[in-house]
Image (cartoon, rainbow, N blue to C red; front, side, top):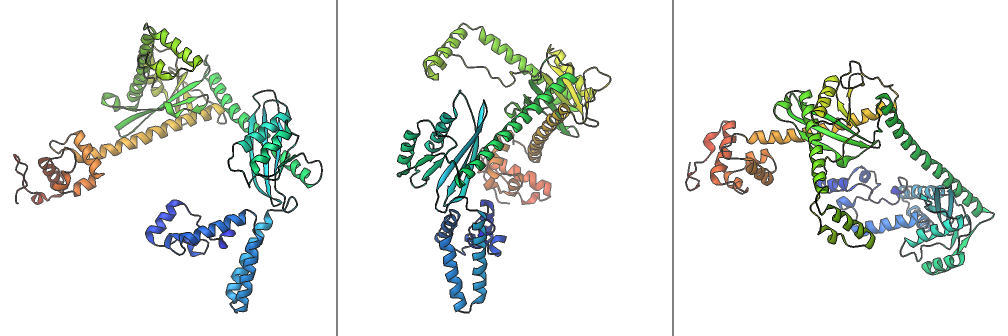
Length: 534
């Protein structure tokens, strides 16, 4: 691509770079070094740039000879005109085109168009690879892994594979190759060949190469499929193994009697005791479940120290859990509850629309905190762990276990324990705890910054008589920032919803008093709202 941009200088920048160049009237670096025709500043028209892009696509599609021949004629003309500098540039362009074209080596006879399929399979899965050969050169490659949901033979698998690949694509006429090379003859090969010929509008041969270049290429594609299946299995096994190992190590190190299917981690964030917030992140089967993340604002006496804030957040989280459990239990005791379940089951069997079922049910209770964790992790040491354990004990929850991860030495603390649990530095379980703790800290910090920004905005408007929360929101919606509100006149302020002349004058007076320029504020008739002469 970099080599070809000197011959086909099409735009390759992002939309953001294009907009900045259009706004400034100056092209980017590629425009200055002649690797972009710079349509952003009008060096080339949209029609000419489109033609340039189509030439680029034509060359990448394998038709290099017409461009090389054209450039050779241009070079000869430049030499005849004694324009040796332009001839040298054209010569370099020809060398670049040939260099790029020769990198894609000829693998089959020139003019051969074929799709080469190969697969490597085991009892459960099969890796598929296909090389698209056009003009004797490889023009593309695809690979994927399919699950063998039923016991099937290789010929049946090849048949289903061809039906899937060519059946999903529309408008194949002119693009489907003359040959389809496969490792084994598919089931119903004759009918399949007729179907592909109908899609192409010309004959398509399905063949199994036995010798020669085509057989050698098929062997290469088969090697790719074998390596792809090995890589797929190693990645999946590695991820699953590491997660399972981490969860098992934690369970054994903490001597817990239950598997750690769901872990919740809590963190507290604040700046010198102001804007105190809490965060809850959730991990299920070792993977984050962001839809269950929750944020808490901590106010009152609980905001005075970290342990009280942690106690408050844990209490609120599990109080909500108990309340939702109670609501669900009450719903289950309602007379129509079993009828509703039967209606849902009937709908699943008969295909009845969900509207019919919904008409017979009461609104479902919300389930924001419906699922309890097996393990609660708090960011902190012994004080935070004891505060969290006390919150659970006060609510009567005994089947949720609590640990804390202290940042200083990465020690794992248990409630009412005098000594921490030390996990090896290379432990997968410790790495999982660190990852959960860091995610909870990141989530808490982002919420704290958001809340602090809002608080700073609100504090700038404090002290304006008659300006409540809804009118502050109306002002911010109208002007966007406190700076814009401060610069607005009385007439402009009254454009905001709920802001009259008297209140607008009070806002202007509030900011001008701060700036020491109260004399600039006009007088207002408080009865009629009329602006008086100063």
